[in-house]
Length: 313
Image 1 (cartoon, one colour):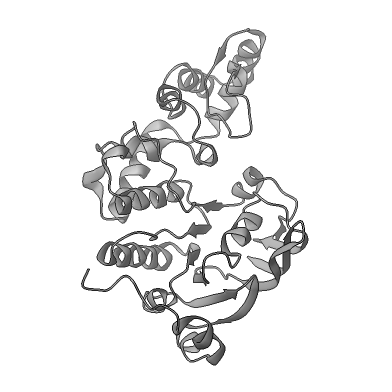
Image 2: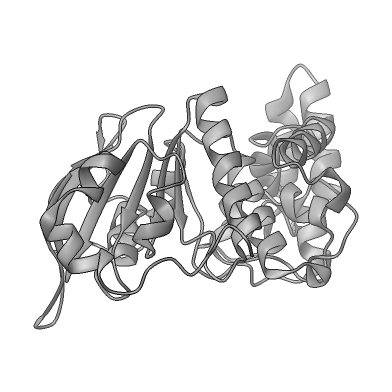
């Protein structure tokens, strides 16, 4: 991913001021800076939730500057937000089964999303279509009906749609058994398989963060954008989350760009490079050792606070 001269203005306020940096394949990159320095705005521009004022964003060779969030996601980009977006009345495993395209807007009911997780009429029609050699016949018959059903609902669309539309969406998702296996494998990767049957509303803040990361991994992303995944998480669990992310990068080659406002903490968590922002501007990009020894960074950050997540917590 390449960010070139990214600038974002809100009226007369310049939130991000001509910053440039790259994330290479298989890199674990930290994006750091104090609250309000433009980190989340940068993420929102990269993921398509905001249109930049000027500059260029390129993901895997594609200019995504004017693309919708779903189009960017289809390139293999997945993000989390500062606040976890889980369905509280669903189990952990059910949360992981919700198709990634629906994770931008968790506004439908639990029963609707259980159908979206490959249950009900949509999956049966998809199965029938897959079994028939002339599957377009099934799609055409479904299109002629006036039946509507909840299918694999995209965040920007009306959830009431023809079975034909639901059928097309369903056929573009892996079969239920395959996705279920992937969900359990993801929980194993995060070292929390025991949480599968737990309701999301029973989880601690740190556990919710882990599940949110797990959901982002379900689509086999090539680039993960994680917005402060350890904010408010106690030291040991925060370090475990970073260790799992480092392992994920090393084992799968996925690229990870992670927002963190605590410089002292992220310097010790195994990231490859750090992008340092201050007041909307790029202060520097370098390895943890280079950042640690940079005088401008020391003046701006290391002298103002320190780490709140001690190893002994």
